[in-house]
Length: 289
Image (tube, rainbow, N blue to C red):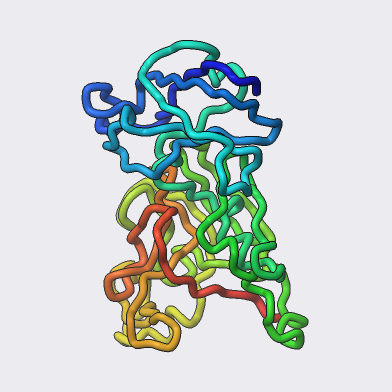
């Protein structure tokens, strides 16, 4: 992409919250322009130069360009102003969704954490982009999760066919099917009920896996039976080597957002969700033949 002036308008498709879509409240529906002085090679990226919240004043931000997704050093960083000067980036490719720009992406099949859990690569070698907007996560310099695991243990693990929901905001809904050696549980696996648009009692359901794992039913510490999306001590997990309780990721997305991912928190509640970009623990599962 030659040096020059360009403009863009971020996608807010599917968003009904006027905090995102009302131009008097935020800049996400406005057009913004910038001028580059360096050519961006094929496969390069154009990004905001800093993270942000939905209510960030976009006029305070800059644009950084990169030669390739794995680069952490920018080609250049340039000023951004409101306007429609130069070429519309939408005529050259796809502009990322506003929610994904702010808080990450909740699609399991394309997630960094799935890639890490199933990689045996050495430190700094497991990550590669899974979509046009991917950037390296903070743990890209670590070794893959499989790296260093006992070979006898790995020899008895089989890939599992997983069905995982897709959000209906930046994407079109439906489900992905993946084959993974190691994976995060879906909400139903941990006896939290079917994934829904909001809380478990929502009438709109997106059916993922149908299997409830025995551990979360037969060994419930409260002695009860049946679905329990609320507090359940049996779901509590702790930071390795400590007594500090941690929230931990499920793989189910919160389908009402492009970025929300279910996690277990607050004493074992299964239906909570957080931004895909935040730090949570993991309790990976696998299937032994």
